[in-house]
Amino acid sequence: MSEILNQQNSGSITNKETIQNTEILGQQQNWTNITILLLLIFIVTTIITKSPKHTVTHLQKEVKKIHKKYGEWIIEAQTNPATSQNTRIIPLTTIEDLSKLSEEIGKPIIHYQSTKENKHGTHIYYILDHDTLYRYILQEPEPKKTTQKHT
Image (cartoon, rainbow, N blue to C red; front, side, top):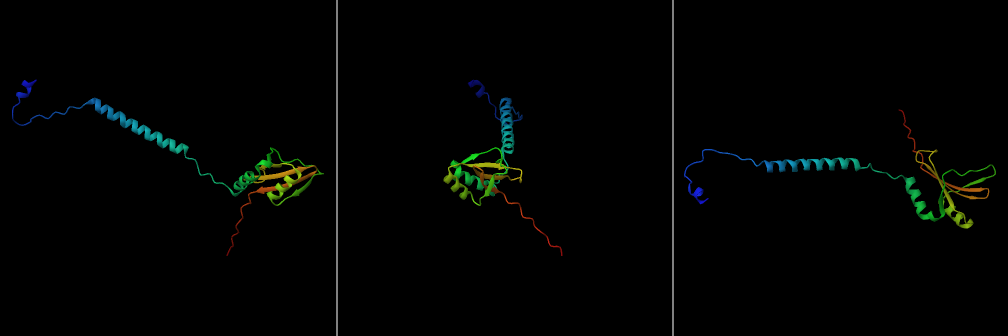
C-alpha cells in the first residue's frame, strides 16, 4: 500500500471522473417519495376532517338551558300529547311556571320535539293532570319579513 502512495507524480489533473454512489441516490429518492406521500396524506386528512362550523341557534341554547336547570323533572316523549275533547289545555308563558306546577302536583314535565311546524322544530313541554294539559311551547321565531318601499 505504501508503494502506491509513493508512486505519485507531480503535475496537473487531466481527467475528471465523477463516480455516483447509486445507493445514496436511491435513498434520497425514497425519502423524497415518503415525504411527498406523508404531505399528501396530511392534506387529504385535513380536508376530510375539517367540519363546517356548527352554529347554535337561540332555540338550541334555550332548550339546553332548560334541560340543564330542570332535567331531573323532564322526561322525553316520542309523540305529541294525545288530547280528547274533554281535555282542557292551559298554555303557560314560562318554563318556570310549568316547573313550579310540576313540583306542586308531583308530576314530571314531559318534553316533545316536533319538526312539523317549522324547520327549526318546536319544543313542547307539558304536564298531564287528569283532564288538564298544562303546556309551554318553545319555538324559534319566524324570520321577520322585510318590506321594501317603492319610490
